[in-house]
Length: 118
Image (cartoon, rainbow, N blue to C red; front, side, top):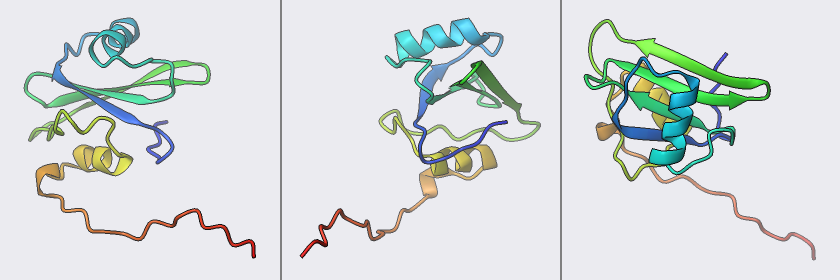
């Protein structure tokens, strides 16, 4: 089962992918096109030409897993090429059909590492 969490990184291949490719060819694309290690535990996203299908490649503890999704209507929104790695929230928006071009991120407080020893 696929779980999207903040601990993983999500890399999107912006080019066109052949959806007939399996584990080994997709792993090769991760190395050659994205310059990443496919066994790192990160998730790699591939789209077909019409953006109606996607594959997610993940290396889990006991081997590779591929998640494949085909839309009956509509298309997937592609992230910008400079958004690698993307957040799990952005990937969830893509999978849910939310236009990521219209998303506005509001400022949030980020807790800093403050030394409280006095």
